[in-house]
View: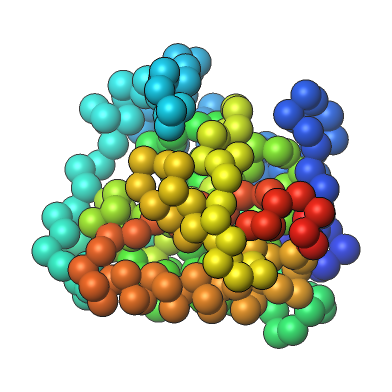
Length: 269
């Protein structure tokens, strides 16, 4: 696939607001969405993504419910999970088996703070949840299991900073936490509305660490005030993930823009 080379000057530190989310797409947005739509027109997905009925459910948590019937009927059956530390199985489906046309581009950074992250391969998710739903694959040929690593997370966080759309989100599903393939990957996609958890109050535990209690499950909030903090935050998130997995607890990670745990004006952006 072609390379998408970027530098720190390409980071969008202030994305567009929800009032006009498509006003000024970044170079990253244009390349990703153009390639994604091209693959949709060429029939490379398992289904054609149409309008998705969406509403916010009543109640204090305000869950966002979305109906995507084709994903439940057409997607590849998830692989069984026997342990949160299942090794990579070369006999099961993995991302070395993707068709070349499913690959969009390879992300590679030059310059910037600290050593660059490992290149990320960006591929379509053939069973998409939303428009622009892609897989972020850290060197699939290394055949790593679905255990989050700091280099992979840092690369995905940098990808999030390349988007100017307010709804572009990066996420990770661990084994037992929704992952359907035991081969290291993260997700990127464009949401059509903000998620309530992104505005939920956090109990400060430290300058860049908070505790979210308002969601359907408690969560830690890690905050990076700028690109230079992505590496230490990635390491901190992965240390927490390792502790959770060691305790037998499955986990997920969601990366979004927002304020520090202490609230607006507490530093960073």
